[in-house]
Image (cartoon, rainbow, N blue to C red):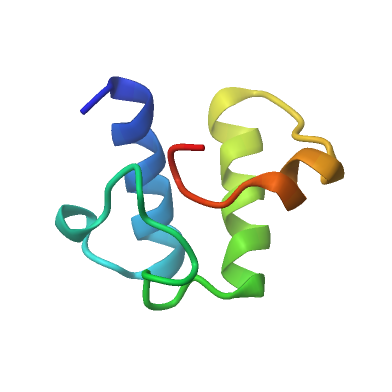
Length: 68
C-alpha cells in the first residue's frame, strides 16, 4: 500500500473509529462504518492539517473513496 494511502487510512481510522486494518484505498462512506457527513468534514480537516493543504469544496464533493 502506498505511503500516502497508509497515512490516509490512519486519519480515517482516527476519525471514524474503524480499525485501520479493515480500511484500504477503496474504502468509502458506503462501505465504512462511521463515515458519515460529520466524519467526512473531520477527515477533510485532518487531511488539510496532516498534509498542510487546503482542499477546495468542489474537489471534496468529488471524492468517493479514500484513494480517489
